[in-house]
Length: 246
Image (tube, rainbow, N blue to C red; front, side):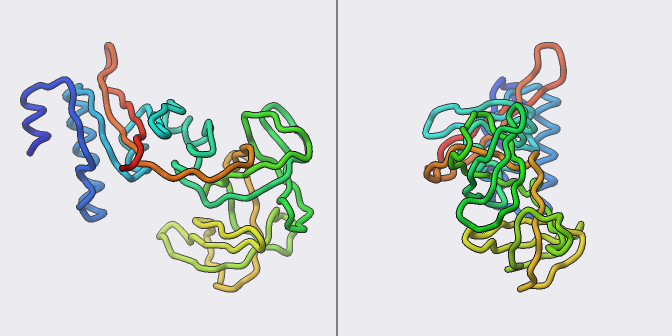
C-alpha cells in the first residue's frame, strides 16, 4: 500500500526497508518481481534494503558494498560476484568456505598457483587475485559455490579430499557439506548425484570461483541494499549498496 501511494504521488525517490522479510518463499519471490517491475516502469530511484544478498543481486543492475560506513566496491552484480575487491566483499556475497593457502608462483596476470597450507596435501591448483604476493607468502582462499565441484577421489582429478558431512536435495541436484581435514567445512558443493554421508570424496576447484587475498582476520557480515534509478534516456536501471547491520 505504501509503495502504491509513493508511485501515485510520482515521487522521485523510494526507500524500501526489508519489505519482504516476513513473507514465505513463494510470495516473497512473486512480490520481488512485482516491486521490480513497478519501480522500473515508474522510473523511480529506489533504495532497497535487504539481508538477502541474492535478493539484492536480483533487483539491482549496480551494487555497492559498504564496510564500516566506507564504500569499498561498486559494480554490476556480476562484477561484484566474480571480482570481489576485498575479502569482506567475497564473504558478504556468498562463499562455500575459506582455505588458508601458500602461494607457489605467479602463473599469469592475476592468476596464481597455490597449495593448501599445512595440510600435507601436495596437489596445487590455480586461484585469482588482484594483489601480487611473492612465492611462499600466506594467503586466504575464498571459494564460491560456483568454484568447487564434487569428483571422485580415485581418478586424480581432485585438488582436495574430504568427507561428506551432510547432503541436501535441491531439485536441480544435490548440495553437499564437505569436511576438509584440518581446514573446516565447505558448503553448497554441488553434484548431479548424491554422495553418502561419511563418504570420502574429491573436490575440484575452478580458478574462476577461487579468489585469493592476503591472510587476515575475519570480518563481520553486514546487510545489503539494492535499488533502482532511471537511466538518462532509457528504461530504469538498478543501483545498490550494502549498509552495516545495526
